[in-house]
Every structure is written in C-alpha cells, then in structure tokens.
Image (cartoon, rainbow, N blue to C red):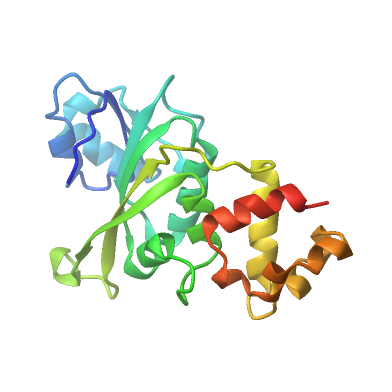
Length: 225
C-alpha cells in the first residue's frame, strides 16, 4: 500500500486511547484529537499527559477546522454518526489530504461502491466526486472488547488527482440527493423539476440513479436549470 507522508493529524473519537498511544509516538507531527465524552477526555489526559492542549473537547460535527493548511484524519468513527462524519470531511475537502477511518462494514462498502451496485447511493457518489475511495480491509467483531454485533471495515480517502468538472458543489449535492430519493424511478421522473423538458428527452434520463457513474452526475450538473 502506498505511503502518504503528513505533518498534521486529527484523530476523531480517541475513546480509551487504543490508537492514540501509537499516534503520540510519531515524531514531528502536529497532532490533535477530538473527543466529546468528558469522562474519556479526563481518562486520556491522565493516561497520556502528552495530550495536554491537544484534545478538542467537543463534537467533531460542530468544530471549526482544526489546522491551517492540509491535514490527515484518522479514527475508529462512532458508528451512529459515521455518515455525518463523512459529510463533515466533504466540507473540508480542500484541506483533507487523506482520511483513514473504520466504519460499520455496510457503511464502508456503501462509500466504496461503484455504479450498478445495490448499495451505491448518495454517500458513494458525493464522496467519490472528490476522493478516491479504497476499501482496505475488514475488522472482525472479535477484535473488540466487548465484541459489537456488527462487522467493521476500514477505508481510505485520497483527493482525486484530477478534480471533476461540475457546475457547482451545491448543484451536485441537489442532483444526487434528488435522484436517489426516488431511486426506483427513472431519472426523467425523479429529477424532472431540475431540468427543462427538452433536456429530459435525452436517452440518459431513461436510466435510474444507480446506473449513472460519478462523472455522469458531475456532467449532468451543467444541464440543470
């Protein structure tokens, strides 16, 4: 697996410090961790004094960008907000140079899915419109104490080498969410309010959302009202 050097690192949800203790050993890294749980913050500061002034005691979903300039994000992400975490990373897409995260396996598979897959959807398209997604490996339930009821998967996001041309990020989000909101319908019916009737006659609109590639969606934004 190709290595990607970095100088700024944000860990999301360090919890009991299982990963943090190794990250703190990395030399010459500007390291920060964001943790919402007050008891865990107290524990981390007691166990790892080097974390002093490096913990952001707040919800990751509500913090400002933690660094000036590009940074890497890692974490065993809280499963109940993992999709929201992805959208937060999309907000910071111009500064996130790499993300390696553990998600519930179904979420990880969804983010990495290609068109035509049953699990290909909004998070797949919007993430892949800005990042290359690699599904790295599964993590079994037995790797945790106590063991959860779900399997986990680790994925890596890297910014696309060539940005996709699109009318605007706002238009892409609107188009993709509208198309998948009625994924069983043809695009002609699902997104009819976003295009002129003449455009809707094009053959592409006889397809369903899951049949369109990420570049297809990006190209379509230029034809929106």
